[in-house]
Length: 217
Ligand SMILES: *Cc1c(COP(=O)(O)O)cnc(C)c1O
Image (cartoon, rainbow, N blue to C red; front, side, top):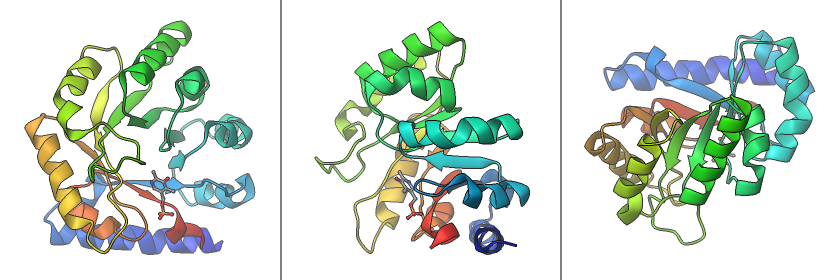
């Protein structure tokens, strides 16, 4: 076993424990292994151990690593979790099954155009700028209702909301706010929680956690 597969067991145990505390079914929490900066040789043992959902931040890096891995394993699901430029939309649609970082109309339009041209239709999370941080991606809270309407009117299946809380010791209130927004807007998916805080995110309703460091470092 590699270190990462060992770690995977520990992470799955923590996910199950957090779900049990929240009276939730652990199967309702998708574990996305974030493999940015890690080569295929470190990813292969995870696939062999049964991991199927993987996240990457950068289109170029994902293009270098994933076509060969996908060719060898047809049932993998690849998630784009990083900021996405509109001019990379076609490449992203060709590669990713799910986009977690949809946060503006220009990107929505570019993804729809790429999906129409290619016939590959990614599902999407709308990223919310939950901490109102100017340097971060995400739809401003005030614009969320109108933006969700636009996404719903598009051919891209909307899974739910995604957020990255401000750095700090207290992500809980931000996770709770994202869950409240999802409920208010009638979406069920909640992509929230990373290595340092995924148990908290699960207790507050996360349906997808994006975990990198806890696998590898
Ligand atoms: C890198 C990254 C993660 C994983 O973070 P870790 O702290 O390494 O678990 C999750 N989400 C996003 C958007 C990231 O860029």
